[in-house]
Length: 292
Figure 1 (cartoon, helix red, strand yellow):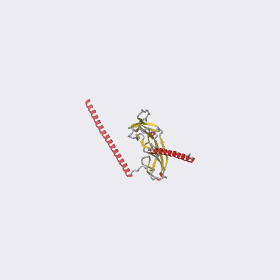
Figure 2 (cartoon, one colour):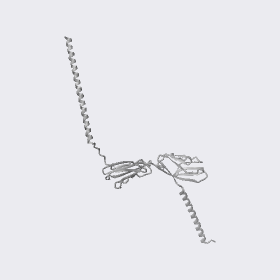
Figure 3 (cartoon, one colour):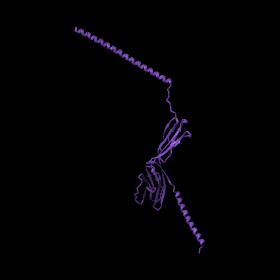
Figure 4 (cartoon, helix red, strand yellow):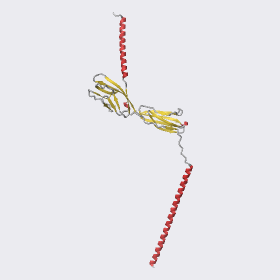
């Protein structure tokens, strides 16, 4: 009859084997999870992307699903006529490729490729992460200045993901400028982001050149602040006097020409009047002679 010590040892060994089996199973589970590499896919708002789900070309596929959070996107079931609605902006291309059109921010996220082969009941699963981006517009620069400082605002719209506006001020020290306000606004419908930032520049340090602002990879035009106002240029006094004299001479000559033509016109008119008077007198004398 086995002793109590022997039974205890046997029970301890059995418990140890059970624990070892659980550890091996858990370790195997985690190794499989870690070996499932996530496929990274990128697209831009308004453009198209293609999900390429890996599969074994030498095996016959029973069904293929592309889904997101257990929501069917597109796919096929070989032996059944499936009536599941597909996403209207997708199209099945070849065997396990799905083209997605007209991307928007809501399409950003994790997707799963599910494939079952005809010779197996297991389902192979691959994960794809789609990152949807949108390019920000070139930042516009507006400024208002007084003798003491210049306030500059940089603004850019229509980007994703959220990105802060950055200032490119070179060697401009912190005592020469400071950021007054920065903000990002998300459109509630499109989820696109507008990025703003306003900074003050101290004009007591003089002109500050070659400044710009950027959001992501997009940079504004280079600008300067605290530029003194340009005073109107005064002309050369010699040139000015010469021009005035020339205008006086020309005006005087025009007056002389007008007076000369006026006097000439009066003389011509007087001569014509004399001729007409002599003709009238001659006609009167001729009439008297006829009457007598």
